[in-house]
Picture (cartoon, rainbow, N blue to C red):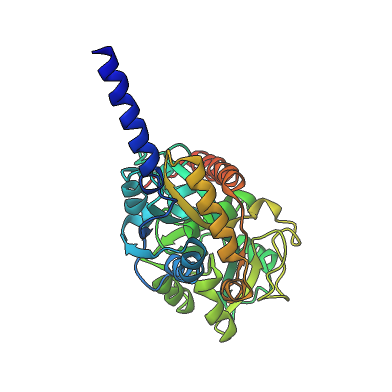
Length: 324
């Protein structure tokens, strides 16, 4: 019996060696599902579409975009936590569901730090503080002075409770001592419409939403929230220049998967993403919407997201914010 077991073991070893290349094909060996947690046409869809083709070229495999909109991106993020950790299900992450929204709920739907594998950052972009073009304020410090002189009459618009536009308004209140009332809308478009109509006085949102109205002369840019000026708005000061450094914030987009993806698969995906982003065409497309390609690798991107979680979670606790 012992001799028979030895023979069988040897035969199995020979078979495994012979079939090794077929059994252990190089990743990826089939199409990759790329989840977008928002409807087509928005900023996250834009990022997914821009990187789709060059990432397919780098991986030599198809990426199939799968829309799973709802609840500010948290439905898609929660779904990702239940996916197989094999690198074949990924998601385009952004600030709201990966640094803000979970902390606004009485029971966190997922842990944005522990339940995901961070693969690489795609872009970062400043937010822009805007008001109507006919407002007397010329920059954000002017607006703050006006708001203090008109206490109780000023408010800020957002694209919805728990969004980055909401939290940026709360950050402005905390950093400046203002007490502007939050007026939430169902998305950036209706919020901008109400701002133009005079129902609200200020809004802080991404360039992809605001730049068209700024360029059309309907909105006035008061400041950008990044550490330096936006090349799309060279005459608009940063909050740091205005002495409002506590208002600094950026929005991020990146590639994530469920927790537990093997390190060698993460390395393949991270390297491919960096290659996809390293083209003038991709950089130009992001620059056109006020974003900057920022290809952080897996470790650096993970560290950045952890820091963003600490920042926004602290603000949420301090201001006692919670979604209904």
